[in-house]
Length: 110
Image 1 (cartoon, helix red, strand yellow):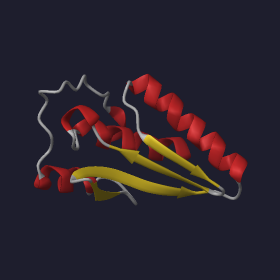
Image 2: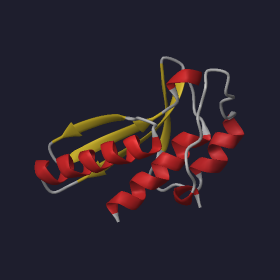
Image 3: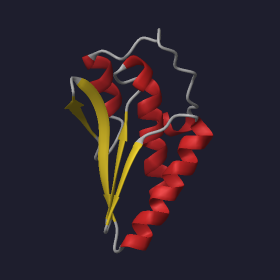
Image 4: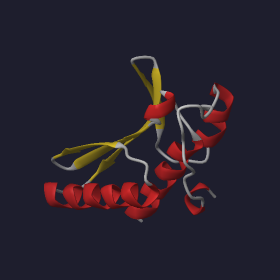
């Protein structure tokens, strides 16, 4: 299971996942999608909450997770929702680390 794995160091010479590898790992996640921004594939999910405080608390938990994994997402906090977007900046694409962290986000919510 992805949420049981630990991120590995991702250097600039690391190899990103190809389309079929991305789709295989995406199938292990629920509610995540791959979006293209500036020709960079990114893994994204919107989490919904009853109010701003719950969304804020979740955003803080994701920030703590990011620090533990030393892999940092984009976190958009809005009233009642948080959008989390993972991608590996150093390779300008998706790495297995992104899918590991996405799975761990889903564990935070449970």
